[in-house]
Image (tube, rainbow, N blue to C red):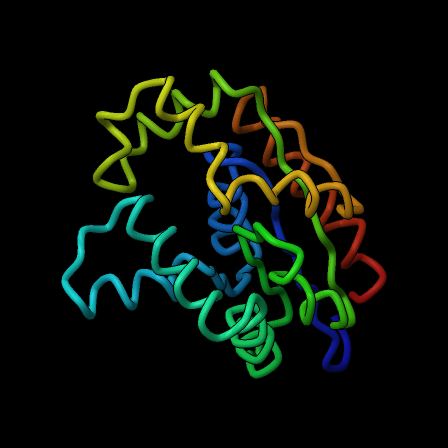
Length: 190
Protein backbone atom coordinates (compact mmCIF):
# COMPACT_ATOMS: atom_id res chain seq x y z
CA UNK A 1 0.00 0.00 0.00
CA UNK A 2 1.24 3.45 -0.73
CA UNK A 3 0.94 6.81 0.98
CA UNK A 4 -1.51 7.43 3.76
CA UNK A 5 -4.44 5.66 2.10
CA UNK A 6 -6.51 3.58 4.46
CA UNK A 7 -9.03 0.92 3.68
CA UNK A 8 -11.99 1.18 6.04
CA UNK A 9 -14.10 -1.98 5.86
CA UNK A 10 -17.38 -1.55 7.73
CA UNK A 11 -19.65 -4.56 8.23
CA UNK A 12 -23.41 -4.42 8.67
CA UNK A 13 -25.62 -7.41 9.43
CA UNK A 14 -28.10 -8.84 11.88
CA UNK A 15 -26.93 -10.54 15.10
CA UNK A 16 -24.97 -13.73 14.46
CA UNK A 17 -24.37 -12.98 10.78
CA UNK A 18 -20.57 -13.09 11.15
CA UNK A 19 -19.48 -9.46 11.49
CA UNK A 20 -17.06 -10.11 14.37
CA UNK A 21 -15.76 -13.24 12.62
CA UNK A 22 -14.83 -11.08 9.62
CA UNK A 23 -13.16 -8.36 11.67
CA UNK A 24 -11.18 -10.94 13.65
CA UNK A 25 -10.06 -12.62 10.42
CA UNK A 26 -8.99 -9.29 8.92
CA UNK A 27 -7.05 -8.52 12.08
CA UNK A 28 -5.30 -11.89 12.27
CA UNK A 29 -4.51 -12.36 8.57
CA UNK A 30 -4.04 -8.81 7.33
CA UNK A 31 -3.10 -6.88 10.48
CA UNK A 32 -6.25 -4.76 10.40
CA UNK A 33 -7.04 -2.57 13.37
CA UNK A 34 -10.51 -3.35 14.72
CA UNK A 35 -12.85 -0.69 16.05
CA UNK A 36 -16.27 -1.46 17.46
CA UNK A 37 -19.30 0.44 18.67
CA UNK A 38 -19.75 -2.40 21.18
CA UNK A 39 -16.30 -1.65 22.64
CA UNK A 40 -17.37 1.93 23.39
CA UNK A 41 -20.50 0.65 25.11
CA UNK A 42 -18.61 -2.11 26.95
CA UNK A 43 -16.31 0.58 28.40
CA UNK A 44 -19.39 2.14 30.02
CA UNK A 45 -20.77 -1.25 31.14
CA UNK A 46 -17.45 -2.16 32.76
CA UNK A 47 -17.01 1.22 34.40
CA UNK A 48 -20.39 0.99 36.11
CA UNK A 49 -20.09 -2.76 36.87
CA UNK A 50 -23.23 -3.57 34.89
CA UNK A 51 -24.07 -6.92 33.40
CA UNK A 52 -22.72 -7.27 29.86
CA UNK A 53 -25.81 -8.33 27.93
CA UNK A 54 -27.73 -7.16 24.86
CA UNK A 55 -30.39 -5.36 26.91
CA UNK A 56 -27.85 -3.28 28.83
CA UNK A 57 -25.94 -2.39 25.66
CA UNK A 58 -29.12 -1.31 23.89
CA UNK A 59 -30.23 0.87 26.82
CA UNK A 60 -26.83 2.57 27.06
CA UNK A 61 -26.70 3.11 23.31
CA UNK A 62 -30.19 4.58 23.25
CA UNK A 63 -29.36 6.88 26.18
CA UNK A 64 -26.08 8.15 24.68
CA UNK A 65 -27.59 8.68 21.23
CA UNK A 66 -30.78 10.19 22.64
CA UNK A 67 -28.91 12.59 24.91
CA UNK A 68 -25.93 13.56 22.75
CA UNK A 69 -27.23 12.92 19.23
CA UNK A 70 -27.63 9.93 16.93
CA UNK A 71 -24.19 10.48 15.43
CA UNK A 72 -22.10 11.06 18.57
CA UNK A 73 -20.69 7.52 18.59
CA UNK A 74 -20.11 7.65 14.82
CA UNK A 75 -18.12 10.85 15.23
CA UNK A 76 -15.97 9.17 17.87
CA UNK A 77 -15.46 6.12 15.66
CA UNK A 78 -14.43 8.25 12.67
CA UNK A 79 -11.96 10.24 14.77
CA UNK A 80 -10.45 7.01 16.11
CA UNK A 81 -10.15 5.65 12.54
CA UNK A 82 -8.57 8.87 11.25
CA UNK A 83 -6.00 8.90 14.07
CA UNK A 84 -5.07 5.27 13.58
CA UNK A 85 -1.81 4.61 11.72
CA UNK A 86 -3.27 1.33 10.41
CA UNK A 87 -3.62 0.85 6.66
CA UNK A 88 -6.59 -1.46 7.10
CA UNK A 89 -9.33 -0.61 9.56
CA UNK A 90 -12.36 -2.76 10.14
CA UNK A 91 -15.54 -1.98 12.01
CA UNK A 92 -17.92 -4.82 12.64
CA UNK A 93 -21.21 -3.46 13.77
CA UNK A 94 -22.74 -0.51 11.93
CA UNK A 95 -26.44 -0.52 12.79
CA UNK A 96 -27.78 2.93 11.96
CA UNK A 97 -27.30 5.35 9.09
CA UNK A 98 -25.73 7.71 11.64
CA UNK A 99 -23.07 5.04 12.29
CA UNK A 100 -21.64 5.50 8.80
CA UNK A 101 -22.24 9.25 8.47
CA UNK A 102 -18.60 10.25 8.98
CA UNK A 103 -16.89 7.00 8.06
CA UNK A 104 -18.48 7.05 4.60
CA UNK A 105 -16.66 10.33 3.88
CA UNK A 106 -13.26 8.69 4.38
CA UNK A 107 -11.27 7.63 1.33
CA UNK A 108 -11.19 3.85 1.22
CA UNK A 109 -14.58 3.38 2.93
CA UNK A 110 -16.35 0.15 1.95
CA UNK A 111 -19.70 -0.86 3.46
CA UNK A 112 -20.16 -4.63 3.46
CA UNK A 113 -23.42 -6.42 4.20
CA UNK A 114 -23.02 -9.87 5.71
CA UNK A 115 -26.06 -12.09 5.88
CA UNK A 116 -27.18 -15.54 7.00
CA UNK A 117 -30.57 -17.07 7.65
CA UNK A 118 -32.14 -16.51 11.06
CA UNK A 119 -31.88 -20.12 12.34
CA UNK A 120 -28.17 -20.21 11.50
CA UNK A 121 -27.61 -16.86 13.22
CA UNK A 122 -29.55 -17.98 16.30
CA UNK A 123 -27.43 -21.12 16.69
CA UNK A 124 -24.23 -19.11 16.31
CA UNK A 125 -25.26 -16.57 18.96
CA UNK A 126 -26.21 -19.32 21.43
CA UNK A 127 -22.96 -21.17 20.80
CA UNK A 128 -20.65 -18.19 21.18
CA UNK A 129 -22.29 -17.01 24.43
CA UNK A 130 -20.62 -13.61 24.13
CA UNK A 131 -23.19 -11.85 26.30
CA UNK A 132 -24.61 -13.30 29.50
CA UNK A 133 -28.09 -13.55 27.94
CA UNK A 134 -27.01 -15.44 24.81
CA UNK A 135 -26.83 -19.01 26.08
CA UNK A 136 -30.29 -19.01 27.69
CA UNK A 137 -32.09 -17.07 24.96
CA UNK A 138 -34.92 -18.87 23.18
CA UNK A 139 -35.46 -18.63 19.43
CA UNK A 140 -38.62 -16.61 20.11
CA UNK A 141 -36.63 -14.12 22.21
CA UNK A 142 -33.99 -13.93 19.49
CA UNK A 143 -36.70 -13.17 16.92
CA UNK A 144 -38.28 -10.57 19.22
CA UNK A 145 -34.90 -8.82 19.63
CA UNK A 146 -35.02 -8.11 15.89
CA UNK A 147 -37.79 -5.59 16.68
CA UNK A 148 -35.60 -3.50 18.97
CA UNK A 149 -34.43 -0.08 17.81
CA UNK A 150 -30.85 -1.24 17.33
CA UNK A 151 -31.90 -4.01 14.95
CA UNK A 152 -34.73 -2.35 12.98
CA UNK A 153 -32.37 0.06 11.23
CA UNK A 154 -29.90 -2.60 10.05
CA UNK A 155 -31.72 -3.40 6.76
CA UNK A 156 -31.67 0.28 5.78
CA UNK A 157 -27.92 0.51 6.36
CA UNK A 158 -27.41 -2.79 4.52
CA UNK A 159 -29.28 -1.39 1.51
CA UNK A 160 -26.39 1.06 1.05
CA UNK A 161 -23.71 -1.65 1.06
CA UNK A 162 -21.52 -1.89 -2.00
CA UNK A 163 -20.43 -5.43 -1.14
CA UNK A 164 -22.37 -8.46 0.10
CA UNK A 165 -21.13 -11.62 1.83
CA UNK A 166 -23.24 -14.76 2.17
CA UNK A 167 -22.37 -16.48 5.45
CA UNK A 168 -24.71 -19.46 5.22
CA UNK A 169 -21.80 -21.77 4.42
CA UNK A 170 -18.51 -22.77 5.98
CA UNK A 171 -15.91 -20.53 7.60
CA UNK A 172 -13.58 -21.32 4.72
CA UNK A 173 -16.20 -20.01 2.28
CA UNK A 174 -16.62 -16.81 4.30
CA UNK A 175 -12.85 -16.30 4.54
CA UNK A 176 -12.45 -16.73 0.78
CA UNK A 177 -15.06 -14.01 0.23
CA UNK A 178 -13.17 -11.70 2.62
CA UNK A 179 -9.87 -12.49 0.87
CA UNK A 180 -11.48 -11.55 -2.45
CA UNK A 181 -12.55 -8.19 -1.00
CA UNK A 182 -9.05 -7.49 0.28
CA UNK A 183 -7.61 -8.33 -3.11
CA UNK A 184 -10.18 -6.16 -4.88
CA UNK A 185 -9.60 -3.09 -2.71
CA UNK A 186 -5.88 -3.33 -1.96
CA UNK A 187 -4.11 -4.97 -4.91
CA UNK A 188 -3.76 -1.68 -6.79
CA UNK A 189 -1.96 -0.22 -3.77
CA UNK A 190 0.86 -2.74 -3.53
